[in-house]
Amino acid sequence: MITRDTVKHIAKLARLSLSEKEEELYTEQLGNILQYFEELKAIDTTNVEPMSHALQVVNIMREDEVKPSPGHESVLQGAPDAEKAFFRVPKIGD
Image (cartoon, one colour):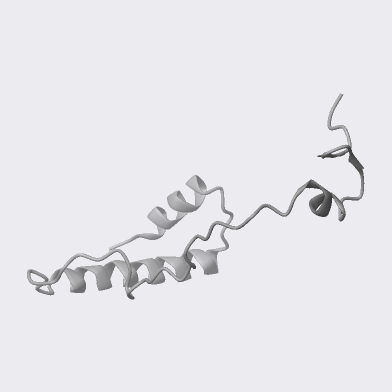
């Protein structure tokens, strides 16, 4: 069972300022969460395969294809400032 003092301690560690109403609410909510975990412990999971996601995850990215480079000229056409085959950018720092 989680206590109000535990919630205050957690809030202090997280540098949170909670009202008394919030402390009461979070004490109840965290207590309910921990109680639910106790219920889950009672479930037999001996034949259940461990999984990393609740749903099956499928990679939706396309296959890599080798394509020709567009070339310096066409890439630099959209540049706001270019010099020879390079982009010019503002100086950063001193």
